[in-house]
Amino acid sequence: MTVILNTWIFENDVKNGIKQDELVDRVSKLSVDGIEVRREYFKDLDSELPKVAKKAKQYGLIVNYSVPDQVFLDDGTLNPKLVTYFQEGLIMGIKKIKFNIGNFAAFTGDLKQAFSEVPLDKITMNVENDQTELSGSVKALTTFLGSTKQQNVPVGYVYDLGNWAFTKQDAIQSADELSQYTDYIHLKNVINNDGDLVTSKNLDEGMFDWRAILAHLPKKVAFALEYPMDNKALIQSQIVLLKKEIED
Image (cartoon, rainbow, N blue to C red; front, side):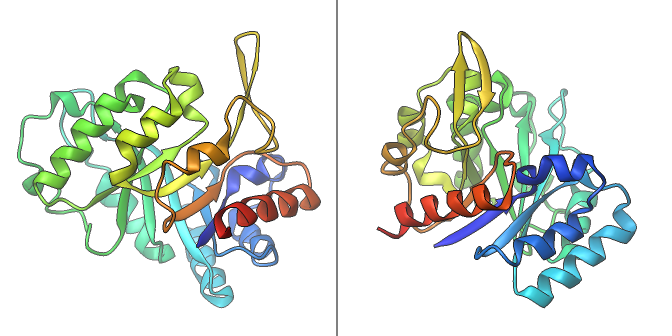
């Protein structure tokens, strides 16, 4: 059992100038296994990445990396920035790096050749279901992940529960179809206010029965909490909630 905290949890603190290396200190006191840092939250990569690495090593924390970019560009070519993102990950000593798929439907090359310069042997690359039809549909995900599996290109999948609300797909059916590829699960719930979708601050509040959905997904994977919370007590209560479920 591995529990990770995505730094979106501390959104208000980040807006008030707290840096992600400082959040490593905070996460170290919360009885979890690691932190998932977000690239868009860094202000100065050159100075902050080594600090994240140093502190994570000091506390024995896993570091994962969320990058808001796509693997394939609009014309179907591999995103040349991937190498840079992986280099940033190597500086931090990360375990996983996460992207959106992008326009794999337009890709016409050889996957092994395309990824030959990307160090997939050193960092696990994941794609997730985002909030778009292009990268967030079950069809797009199974097509890409099936192709990588067939061609022995090591790519994992992040099942993001909350995002199914935005793409209006069935979360349980999606879990069944994507379970074989899943090595990481992002948990958040979504409240539907007459069509206005809002991320909940509590896993038990929202449109998803997250416990029932987890029954359709692998158990021996990493789990991340990924939704803004207001205070330490709430964060601790949500960690306890998750651990109780996945330990049972």
